[in-house]
Image (cartoon, rainbow, N blue to C red):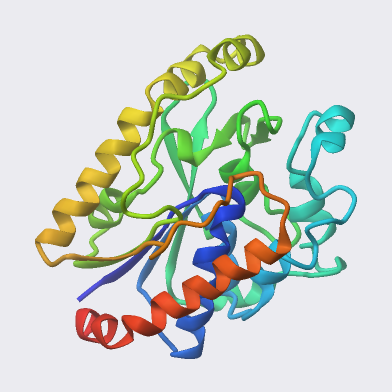
Length: 283
């Protein structure tokens, strides 16, 4: 049986998946195939590297460092999230919080990261072969929120956040041969995606990328289909879903380390409540 893991994005809400992924490490739970979206791809990378606690530091310890995130960043660099600061300055081998890239390479699990082709608005699935020591543009591409971040140029193409085109890529996991899939959502099961706001702003800011605009216009429909697919596979016994068991007042752009810690702790407790169910599902 080939097991898969799908980790949704969601910016600062992904402290929840950081907690669950750390408990996977504690319990030595592994998967044959892993796919992450946006911040979920970054969290998955630390999990595959076996670096327990590293993700939490990016939601709590590094949160207020200059260059990490904020309006000042946006005005100075054109990026609310400092992707280069997070995934180069901090993450590189000589950084303050380096990722163990050799461990990712040595991990036998397949690893895909979802990005969106800015020219077509379609999903692109990078693999860990697209990363190199101190070159994590595949992660940056997966995390480049339109308007809030500049697009990432990589492999002669331009990319935005993977959440625009395949927010919860459970069907990609099954297409890659998985028989059972664990899904980590960043929002409660009651969440219903609404059409994007500030359409006039993103239509102007992204006028060079009409297909990216179209993807944003239809993002709520794509997301609802993703969730319908998740529920269908769950009903068939092929998916097990972790989602926040209570709603915290947390936004994608939150900068509150206490809330981040609370969301991380919620991931821990939600995992512990379903540990036996998870073992049964994966056995």
